[in-house]
Image 1: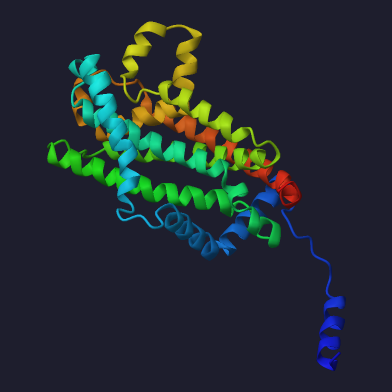
Image 2 (image 1 turned 135 degrees about the horizontal axis):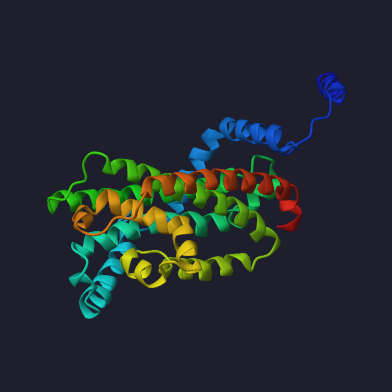
Length: 301
């Protein structure tokens, strides 16, 4: 063995032992986790690009396929609900109305669904090297944002073509609603991705829950149709306590200009603000839960 190699080993032996993993404590641990994620931001960017490349690998049309699902759903709902069930007769610009809701919903559902399976999908990296495991669900969220940006661009373009481009304070609702979607989507992605490592049934439960939550949100029907039937009941509180209900209505308030002639949800901005504040607390708790569970990821995988 060379002298240089011996000297290096001796120097390493004098180095203090450092804990590899999240630091305990709610405040101190959160700060340390955020610093670690920021320090690995380049790796996070690479993982986002890898997610996108893997999704459209060997595909001729590439990102066009990210539009096919919402556009197909739009056609199905427009024909089945808008025409056959005549919902379009009571909801002006029904196509814009539905696509607005689908744009918000697609972001949320993709964040939650891909985020839930992100740790298992990257099990090779998790078992080989230590890095902040939060970057895996965050990378899935980043790729979901790319698809969202494409759909949002189509929505804005359609609004311009139809002469219904949103102006003024409408964009405040868009910002608040997007913040609610991102915060709750990220919180669920973190919590569910950790739980899915220990219990693989979680991913199937997520699929069913998202299907139920879709119909519990006013995407293909007006919220007034529900409110008129459940006003003054516990269901009314639960329905409008659903953050995705408020987020979808917020997107509609922003981009569905033809909806001005219909009734608006009272104090929508305030409701979105409260939902956002609650969501930030849940996001913090989700991150700390993730940090506690991640220490055994490699063994479970």
